[in-house]
Length: 189
Image (cartoon, rainbow, N blue to C red; front, side, top):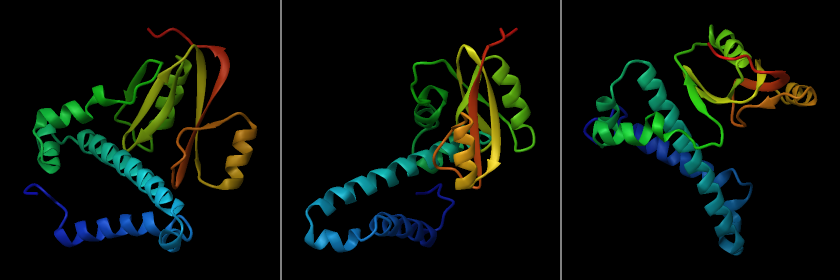
């Protein structure tokens, strides 16, 4: 690709790493493929997980590039499509569909995101996804509180016991959590 910023060698290494993860992480999958027909279905499922993660990473990297001031034309060039095609596919109109109203809180940094989430939470907005420099918020009728903690399974168990909801399963090194307070949301004004 003419606009690529990743060398051919690095691109090959990324492809090899993804293929190795799909083949090796489901314990014993490589061996089962030779003797168990269900191994082929497990391979499909593992590849599906990899594809979903790759799509999530692509969307977050595009959001990050846009938040850093890069144009849709620059993004489109890297993707091998026009700026209009990139914007149509990855712009705010391509956000995940939900039954609630959504908006993006951006740009936010590690230094101001919790204050911004606290303010939004008073009005019933809570984070349902996040990435570099942004949180995807969904509206509800009650106030929400948010926490950001260093990831750990012991921390997870105690937070869940207190009613906190992990915003996204795939998170490291921070875990973002939200919980409704039960207090009616304040009107926005």
